[in-house]
Length: 430
Picture (spheres, helix red, strand yellow):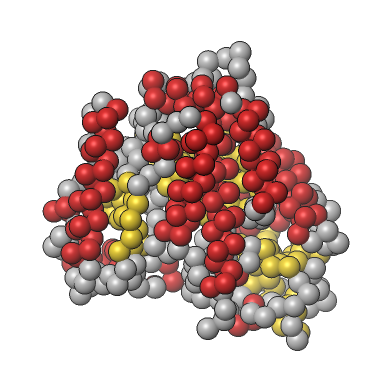
């Protein structure tokens, strides 16, 4: 087990947040319980957190998490219990489930994630098989995994308004594919089958800025409940549309928003006596895998980008062009494993935090994106400490720090639930 108190130096601001959360845990859990009655949680998700020692905030929310293989095997019973709760709520009579993954047949690490996900879903009593959208998968195709297991992908078949596999008609379809390339026709207008998450959770419709608009509202209400400055758990952000990095279109918007964000961050740093250098992260407003991301500490860093930098920012997953970006306050990470920068990633199923791990990068700094080639993962023992704070221990003790991580992750998950409610009207087929 990685002990979080050995990862981050104790800062009075962080300790104050943790103490307030632990002291108010009864009110916080009551607040969450009522919120989940108002808003249906996404089936699953993962939240990238950054802990600067003076600020703890989510910086990304993934609704199609791809790292279940990085969780400790001890988490599987907890994951299965949460999945049972989600399935009973959404599709109580489900017996068969079809899992549709990303089109990554060469990425064995991702396929190990799929294998882990299948195994935990089987623990719920479901019959689970894997359907591929790849045109080259025309028959059941096995893939040997590094851990010695074998994963079999089968071609998805459409029959009227339902989909399935040869001889397999599922009650529900679980997507582990973020639909960055668009919604395939075979998945549109399905009737009589639950699709989890819904199609409008994919990047065809979803925007990071919409998520953080919802998170702003959630953080504001939660901060009033707990008596903290919401900036301590909420990064500033703004948006620039009509951006074309190749043509240098939108540079004025980017420069203005970068400068405005840096000014606001500097003011907060002065207020709290923080000596770090403020920075922002400019990233594509849709998409994942850490693509289309750059760190900026000064306006000069965004004006007059060279060709290599423009190329890096122009294209994201599936070769899609970047036309809109979010300018997000950068949150330093003070967490380290050995000599390497680290950040916690929390995993949720339904309304429950079911585990997590540290993303670690040996060659990235405290103000850089760690979701980049060369990263690796260290599991965290989240299974009880995230849910049960211990008032007899110090705020930075593992149960209390993990409980704090779990609260911020649940706030992001709640914001995702609100975001999806608002995305639904935008999801009409094009």
